[in-house]
Length: 178
Image (cartoon, rainbow, N blue to C red; front, side, top):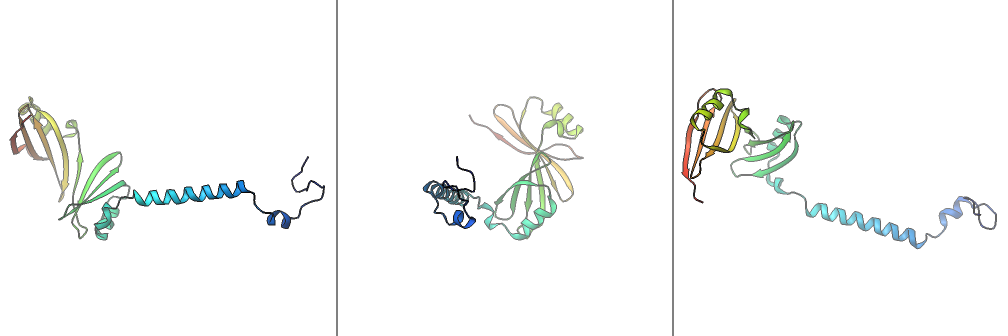
């Protein structure tokens, strides 16, 4: 029986003997596999990294971090005259729009019809009951909240807008072809 720290001849190995012992091939192979795995992981992470936010201004990013401290999963898009940050915060998906100089100009979120102010929901049910909702979002800009809704009824599509205190106004109507 071999006891840790002893040699088969019965004498104790010194620490120097243990440390200077040539490593066996199994340990070398394990180190090579580990090194290969690390290198592969690094290559993959750089290959699939999201570089969409590369052209986004530092001011816009700093403004975003200041306004939305608890944001998660931020994805940036450059839309030319402004940049868009899509993210999750407080279990909601939001989008924030910034001028390249970093000024926030709008925040949007998709909502359900029952999240509309009561008077807008009532008007919608009374005036557009035969339509179904295909898109509905809330936009907050310059201290005011507005709503945009897209409605369809077979061959027509209507886009309406409203401020929180106002009524629905028709923005656009178009025929839908199948």
